[in-house]
Amino acid sequence: MEVPVRDAHAIGTTWLIEFARRPWRASLALILLCLAIYVPGVVRLPAVDRTEIVYAETTRDMVARSAWLDPRYGDTVHQFRPIGTYWAQAIATSIAGPEFTRTIAVYRVPGLIAVTFAVAALFWLATPLVGGPVAFMAATLFAVAPLTVLVSQLAITEGLSLLPATIAMLCLLRLYTLRDDDATSSRLAMLFWSSVGFGMLLNALLVPILVIATLVALAVIDRDLSWLTRTRPIIGVPLALAIASPWIVVRMMQDGVPFSGLGVSAILEALGGSQDMKLRAFPGTFVLALLLGFLPGTALLIPAFAKLWCARDQRIARFLLAWVIGYLAYLELLSSKPGTYTVQVMFPALALAVAMLVRDADGAPKLPTWHAIPWPPIAAIFVLVLFGGLFAATGARPGLPAIVMIVAVAALFYVSAVDGRANRLALWWRDSVAALALFAVTLLAVVLPSLDTIWPARQIARAIAAACPGATDVSTGVLGFREPSGVFILGSSRGLQTPEAIARSKPPLRIVEARWLDRYSHAMQASGASPGIELGCVSTTNVMRGCGLTFRIFGDGLDGRCAPMTNAAACAPLSSLRVKSDQACD
Image (cartoon, rainbow, N blue to C red; front, top):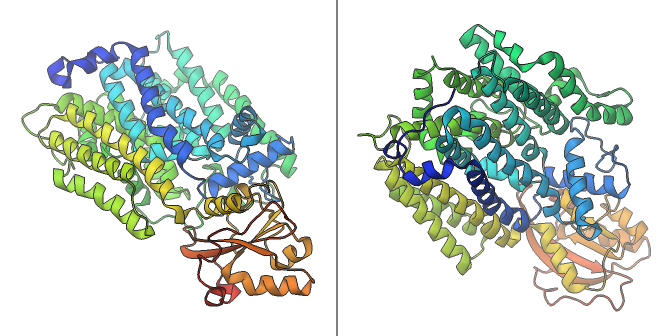
């Protein structure tokens, strides 16, 4: 069913109607919007430790060994991480060339592309249901949501899997609303099952679980699932399994018996997606992540869902309710996944709900009940406090570009709140999208990269490059910093992370955290070797552990290629830094 496009007064602005009536132009605009938001952070944001670097280092090593069916991080095999993400990143790094194998932006490109096309897919697949203007509005709200932006920036599987999840759910929505004799149902069904298959290849059973949770909620509401015959399951299920089968092939090659060594509960938890938390989330964690991560749409989320509930006699309203309620119930009751990486698959439904509310409520005599559009000064102050807090916490000073951009973001937040409180909701949408877009670029491409102290590996790499411009690709040992970035960025060996190992191997470069200096000196003395020439000093912070670090960089056997740095004495004296090694922050 197609909803008639409302006139210019109802939708808010004439230009949006005319613009969205040309799908290819609207699609190009969405792609350019996504690239403008996502690319600066992908390029500028340093490698974020733990998960994304484990993915990137696993891919780098897989390509280096020419073992595309054997991804592993050192000796660790991640049985619950399907092969698809590694392959996508491997293709990207192979195209980029060997000189970029330690450039994190290369490994982020597949996720950036997938999230961008997920936004475009929302527009294309929703337009026949809600009209071009509403679909375009929903796509932009989806694109700028902070947690959508987050997965576009990191080299993790959640960005890649957002594309098949979005396509699968929107195809299922279309099939749910179609007549049995509709000629498009066969194409939609094959696209649905293909997306389910690629979703499994990328992120285990995340997409099937999303689909099943929605269908369970729909069954409760409708008490009828006979329409599922439109999905052509007899053809579709084998198609999805065929697409996902390389994951099982890899599991057989690595495990012998797929998932051997994992208990039943571990397998069930792993199959829900590649990420996992050590502790189960507190009740309400996923609801909170959804509310904070879906800005600016969160401001109208309650009235949007109240409107859906009142219109639940319509199939599109029932499906959108089931999409969110079903999957959110699964996350809160059963999931062990981080909320920041799981709630994004509900954002297309949320965006459609909010966009339909804007279409119908724009210019009405009063604002929708239970809106959360803030008082304009509060909106602006929120931005200033957030960025000010980041600089205060790290002791950094913002440069002029950062100051200008932060003020511009605060101004846009203020203007959007003014329009929203005046019930000019179409203008609120426009200004809010602009505000969140600029916010993302400012935070991820300008402010965070400028906070030097929170990026230890990057700081150490810069110090080494300054001290030893002629020493590239030399063996490096690191004491007191076991984060994955030490391996990926510095090229350090996982086998050179103890004083004894460094004393035996004597790598030309040794990076020693101050807490390990005594053990390092004793080990080198016991082996009859010199600690090396001190080349520099770096004071930084391990944000993953929440503690300060001071690194001394030593060189040995690098005559003519290294010189002591001018900041070699910049850190505190060694005597004041030496503490027991069991206090090491690694």
